[in-house]
Amino acid sequence: MTARLVVLVSGSGTNLQALLDACADPAYGAEVVAVGADRDGILGLERAERAGVATFVRRVADFESREAWDAALTEAVASYAPDVVVLAGFMKLVGPAFLASFGGRTVNTHPALSPSFPGMHGPADALAYGVKVTGCTLFVVDAGVDTGAIIAQTAVPVEDDDTAETLHERIKTAERAMLVEAVGRMAREGVVVEGRRVRFGH
Ligand code: GAR
Image (cartoon, rainbow, N blue to C red):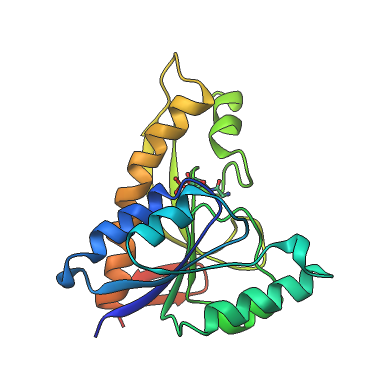
């Protein structure tokens, strides 16, 4: 059985592209059935359209409250009946309605080694702190900011001449490989979450 993925994006969508490319091989075990965004005019949506994948946009500003936006996002995602929801550079926190429907099967990728440097500026915060090793983390989304149970991590070195941008690009190369590998294993083998411990399998 092929796992149905809905991917949510806010930006350039290189992680989405890595998943789209992986899904081209039937042996990968997953397909991207829709791509959603919280804003228009982003490369991530263009990548989906180029791949012939359905898209939708739900902008917070178009709703009277954050709760109404969360309900609308939940409904849009639910209409594609996903097995797994992947937040791939989605720069919004999903809310209670979303977690009630998709908690435990929504994953997010973050450009730092959790629990260090949560939030929107993982690479810049790691650089400012002076760590010599940082990386990326795939986790099961919960109500916190980058706090969920960890599925996979990859370490990435910090170089002396790094800027936040060069470091982020190095992290993103590792992040795409981590995401493709872990989501494929979730699709083919399943995933078990016991408290904070996560393993592939049934
Ligand atoms: C990725 O590095 C992702 O981890 C990060 O945004 C980038 C999106 O790149 N997300 C966060 O920082 C969320 N806290 P992409 O649009 O090219 O996939």
